[in-house]
Image 1: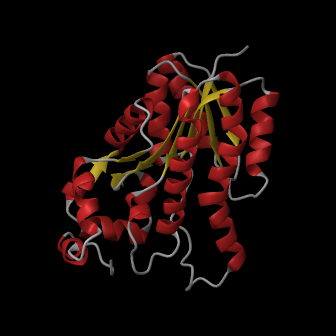
Image 2 (image 1 turned 90 degrees about the horizontal axis):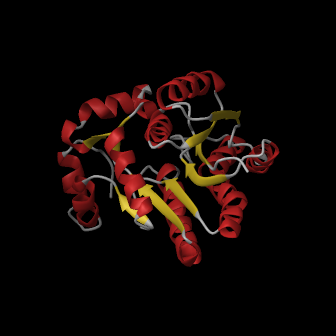
Image 3 (image 1 turned 90 degrees about the vertical axis):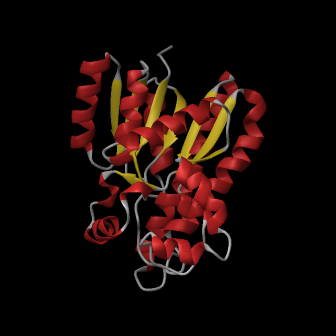
Length: 260
């Protein structure tokens, strides 16, 4: 049997590349999954050279409703099996009310929610059969708050958090951990769009965390069997306060607009 692999979606950029680097540094063989193959091929070569790990690259668009089934079949056909599953793929997405292209809305929902459920549906049962598994679903602190103007990104992350907690309770006695990782503002190329770049410049630097810290904390919490981690001490302090009437005042002071 081949060595077990860590499968990382959204592995062409952002947090996905940092997950790959940290897992490879621990000697973990990888399966990288994303829409863009060129960045993944380069990353695969770099990691193989630096850490002497095996890295497979699979192209997949997880906004396609058949993508998770095809991906699972592809992994099996290659004779590989997954004991670490990192569901990281995601994007900001369309405004639910202002953007009138419903098929685009459906593809966004597929990417952000349905594909995460699909990956868990396909890959967790083999973990149950083997008696070991680790699943990390990248959520967000946005999934813990209700914000005026956000009827898309935050609600999809709320689903990921709820799904992760339910799965964690279901498989906790089978040496399988499921974690919802909830980062706040994190330095990655996720924020390279014009709108997000302007938002980043308008907010204080102390609310931004390095991707290396976020991923390190997340992987450590996964090994400890936690079902949810709010990444960063600042956010662990702020989130309970932001669920009180003080939230609007606090967010306005740090330059984040919206009604809370």
